[in-house]
Every structure is written in structure tokens, then in C-alpha cells.
Image (cartoon, rainbow, N blue to C red):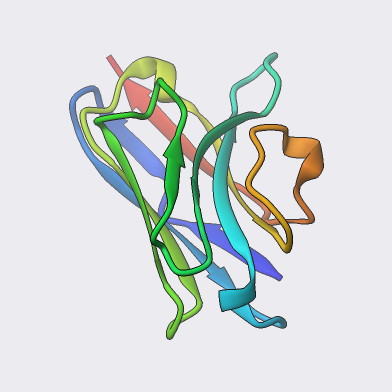
Length: 121
């Protein structure tokens, strides 16, 4: 089970940190990722992190502004978002996969319920 939280309303240029709590499985055995979905758009990959956090991957839109991290002792994955823009407005979802990190949302095994991020101009 995954539960994302930490979303909210922020002005452009501001920051937010999203968290995702995992339970029910051995967290360290899963690749973790963040996706987002804006109204009328498909769910898109934002960032992913490998099992031991030694490997991370970012969408071009997130590079240089967002940082994904994980704490395997606490079963938490984070998405630190800085320099937020109105186009970052979306519902953000955390996801887990046993095998690989894919930009295709259909490849991921487990999903959290999403947390809304709204960036005002």
C-alpha cells in the first residue's frame, strides 16, 4: 500500500516536498517513482529512484528543479520540488515496481492515491 501526501497550493517559484509512505511489502525491494496527471492529460513520469537510491532518473521537465530520494529504514520516498511553475499543477502519484523503472505508467505494479499540487501564477 502506498500513500502520498504533502501536496498543496503554492505560488510560482515556491517549493513543496511530497512524501510517499509504503507498507505491506519489503520497501527496499521496489523501484519507486513519481508520476503526475494534469486535467485532460495522460499520466506522465516525473522521477524515479532505484533500490538503493544510487540511481535516479528525471523527466526533462523536472531536471534541475525536483529531487527524488528515499529512506528505506522509514519506508518513505520523497519528491522535493523547487522553482515550481503553474504547469507543474497536477495530481502527483507515487508508484512502486518490483522489476524496473519505466516512463510508461502502465508498467508499474502499485500506485498510491495521489496528492494535489496547485501552483498559482
